[in-house]
Image (tube, rainbow, N blue to C red; front, side, top):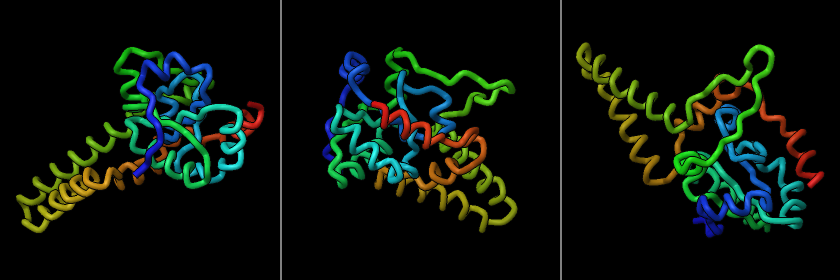
Length: 194
């Protein structure tokens, strides 16, 4: 289990200008609203950013954020394995927004390229609920379809016990969650500039 320090909302808010904030959510989630000044390095691309993050950590503190804290804990553990000290935000961007803090959003391009995307947690709840309901309805036609609902229920229990979410990983790869690929090169350039 990760032992990275955690900052609460007030601590992060008062020190935001002193922290390098790394948002490890998908580009779609990031576009839906992020901490002011946060840089988007999706969790699945974090390894590519390790050299720049090592340098960044030498210059100051890194705060890793995600929607609720689970992915940022995983990111902090990966960074710690590489000798990089970082902190997480208690409750993630969900808690930040719930306390009335501002979320930055990219300005839409000419065709409104950054349309609103549901938060990943909401997408998972919708998908899981829909699949369970579908399994029950189809189970009226043939009992074997009830296995779909049972499989989703088992997946949700496993997700809760392991603090991981396979469904979120799959949903994160869908086109609507990647309205624009994370420009990792631009983000790494910003990190290099300090």
